[in-house]
Length: 80
Image (cartoon, rainbow, N blue to C red; front, top):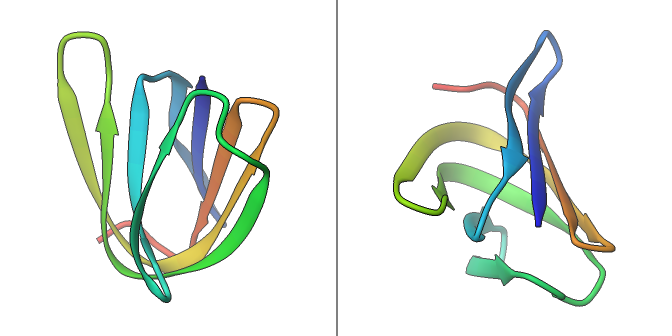
């Protein structure tokens, strides 16, 4: 699965991942390979990325996430 995290002024992350957890408006949720298509608003919180051998965490100040065809795009207001 491929992930991009973007803010209005920069690309924060792009690459292949195993899974990603995001702070959805209705609660935290995880996206895995072959996830159904979804668009959701995001609250302020942690975006946790699982790679093959490590985990990365980015703190965002809200935004939107889109999942479509094994590609996840997180449009974040800002990285904290």
